Amino acid sequence: MSVRELVVLGTASQVPTRHRNHNGYFLRWDGEGVLFDPGEGTQRQMARAGVAAHDVHRICVTHFHGDHSLGLAGVIQRINLDQVPHPVTAHYPRSGQRFFDRLRYSTAYRETVGITEAPVDADGVLATASSYRLEAALLSHPVESYGYRLVEPDGRRMLPELLAAHGVKGPDVGRIQREGSLGGVSLDDVSEVRRGQRFAFVMDTRLCEGVHALAEDADLLVIESTFLDEDERLAVDHGHLTAGQAARVARDAGVRHLVLTHFSQRYPDPEEFERQARAAGFEGELTVAHDLQRVPVPSRRHCAAPGDGLRIPGAQAGRQG
Image (tube, rainbow, N blue to C red):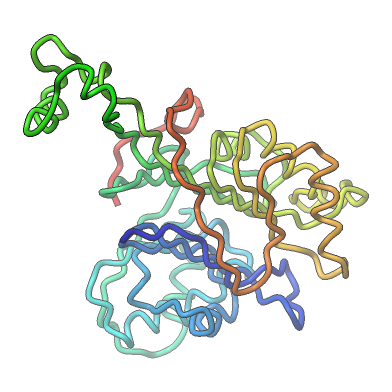
């Protein structure tokens, strides 16, 4: 049985607190796992959450500030210690290659697993797997930062009542799926589009084109909301979002489930993030994330929405990783 869920490993911003670890987010997507932004302490948080090194197939780092990347050293060494049997690919801004190298080889250990380095230097498709396409978009932060997005290809849902009405049954159901038509009956006559699921991950950034492109039509959007709205000037100055800004992005993008995270330690009341997000007009499902929380990806919509990829001029396509 396939499982698609987000496991929240850490939700603090620059400074961890007694209740919030540095960043870390693990996405289970059927038989694969994607680890996003492993900050300091991620290896221990994985153990607490029941996420094993064997579960990790990809590592996606948005940028090389410490709260998003200092855990790389421990995670990579654990992957080698446990001799993970499958390939592991790491995506990160190419401009931070020196930081990735330092973290990967920060201490002595026996390297038993080949980590494939697939740095990001442009918007577009990074990799195509069996059940998703991984995309990236440039964000706006004091250091180069990219957000990520998983898009499942659209499929078809066969409709029994229409199959019966057109006399399509038995082996002919498979034939019409493979061939697109049968005896004057088209696939569109007996089925509907099964819209693929979309997951978006947006960390440290100001409002910019990349934020909106990543969030577009997302079923589950994980997005930073470091500041409350009254501190919007600070957010802009430091390259971050407020709760209200993040919620308006989600509202305008048609997001179904919004997950707010990356909270500054200056705010003692997490419920204020929810209040401000609702005041901004977001009416979908809303989670103010806490450490070790699990958030399921919403079930598929029945019909496809317009657009099936990043709406970014000059996006590259088809690059494998």
